[in-house]
Length: 460
Image (cartoon, rainbow, N blue to C red; front, side, top):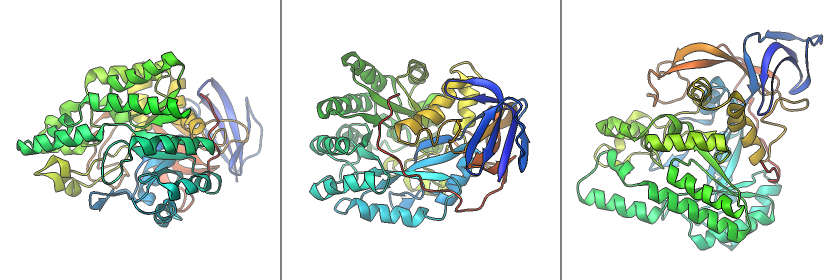
């Protein structure tokens, strides 16, 4: 199958020009003006922006959590992602304390294999680092193609590892060419605040937010960076939300240290005032929580300053009935927020269209940087000869509104209900096939492939 995309405005992390793209099989074969290749299908992209398929490196599909599972499966989640211009996701395999990494990977593969519409990969969350776990690190990187290892500085008793384990993991992962990523919040402080609020009968969603003040994230982010420097390793902080945490990383640049930072679309555009909506605030209960307007300003600035390299989602949806598990106790509300389908269009509408970031920065933080950081570039994340033909054809002027009535995520509400957007994904190509054409699905379940990732070596 061959496809010729004509007259599109091709935008990459560094370029912006009008040209044609010729696709043969699964990859890009030629880029140029007025290409005369014969193709099985011709797509006229006049007036449209053409950019690489977006990569969401932070999603949780069918994730076991608090006695239930996140509501998007690998089937529904990757399909919703494609509708929103995201052609690849990286999910998290969670090790069960007392069991092996292999045991966890087998469980996640059992849910994902053969069920994905879009391409996908895994991070390995290490929740029990011991000598047996240490021996599995090299195998995960070299045989399974999983080069990133998630750690938690919160959720004691289930996910959290201590600082001693963290440093030893950093050293082992570095030895084999991988990277440690972190949920950086001070779990002990948070647990004590949760207990305090509950003892005082303060049980509404607002107290989820008040149990995780900015200092809990800022302190843990700085501590993680200090451990990285001691271990001589490179690391990545997921879902950063606030000015205090960003300033900790800004400070570390003064000693010539590089720490990668991810934020999520929700932290850029919505804020903690939503928690005052009595129990409806449960829709936005996630960890870390939404923050203040001043934190949004800091994160937008961080994107433009190069301190924040990636905009992800932390997509972890739950049905409203599942959220109601915490109607009488905020600590029992399943944490998570649906956004996998909305990220690309929201970042264009709120970022590029409103002049907060350039269109090149938009591509950089959604596509190119995730591919480089996690060892997939130039296979993914760029428009170049030989790269996978993962391509979004985007109308920058089409206006539309977000609603649970029209979205494709398997969740019965939207965190952005009624939000007016400018910019719409019209066609989405995955490895040389039109996957989505004006909202119509053109591929079958199982077309998505697992992407093995090489050793981390890109410096961005």
